[in-house]
Amino acid sequence: MHMLLIAVIMVLVSSISGSPISPQTTITPQELSASVAEIRARYKIPGLVVAIVTKNGVESIAVDGIRQQGKSDLITATDRMHLGSCTKAFTATLCAVLVADGKIKWKSTVEELLGSDVPGMHADWKSVTLEELLRHRSGAPSAPSPEEWKEAFSCADSAKQCRAVFVRGILSRAAAQVRGAFAYSNQGYAIAGRMIEIASGKDFESLLAERVLVPLTIKDFGFGIPTKSNANAPSGHAADATPREMDNPNAIAPAGTLHMPVGEWAKFIAFHLGAKPPAALVGASAELAHLQARGEAEPFEALGWMTADRAWGGKVLTHSGSNTLWYCVAWLSPEKGFAVLAASNQGGEAAVKACDAVCAAAIRVFSKGG
Image (cartoon, rainbow, N blue to C red):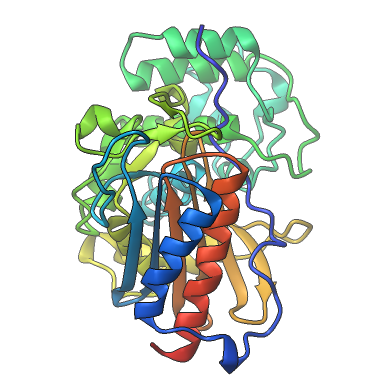
């Protein structure tokens, strides 16, 4: 039986200290590479990658470690890393593309898009909007039922069909949470993904590639276990550093199964920092303010992002992701025009601490203008 993998570890916004960064604590890009090596060794994780990003793209990237415990192949800056729930920002951005196209609205309801696909829809869901799903305020369950999860793992149909079955099961029951209250939910993003598919007539994975990734010149990517699409990719590792090759079912791909090198991920982050958009994303770029707008109540979430206030960055966007075998985190400061990204091919507390520490080091590099 498949173990239950959680596609998300929601970032704790107390991470990356809000304390001012003094000039005495800044380090150079060269020192950043040494810092990555020291931090990886300190927390005893297989591999660690960190990047500093501006709207011009990657300003600096550093990497240290191995692709798989027990083997000697070194991890590289161009290796694919699993993004887990950092996929959600991509899904929300794809929604912005379709909003700009006029194919969907932020206030489009579940019934409008999925009514004919889910004839047994419970009344609780009918007026729930796309934006509520993306903000985790729809009433969607925080976890699927064991029966639905088992069925999703065993589904051998197309990703689109597996997602349709999974979503029908959720929508046939009463909402699991109070609508309007914040309750983090991968299932809500699966529903949003299904709405995208009905609005566009295409499967989520193909549409994300066609409308977001390829226009941003992101070519090296995939969904699910990285080694299944690239044999040379790093392996994921459990918290005890044991190599494992598992991921969540493709039914919840919109919530967290995307993988790509950190340098490719940086192209997407640069777009969110205000880089000049490619022609295919001009419409979506006009929706960035809406995507990044804070909610009115705690935790003041954005669409596909969480938000926080930090002395080093002002009002920042952040998110982390993990399927328990990988971990990554992004911190964006649109006000200061930069972001830091970190990823590890291990899940668990040690990876979280390592990524937090290396992001802090990268922030010190940028604060020095290095």
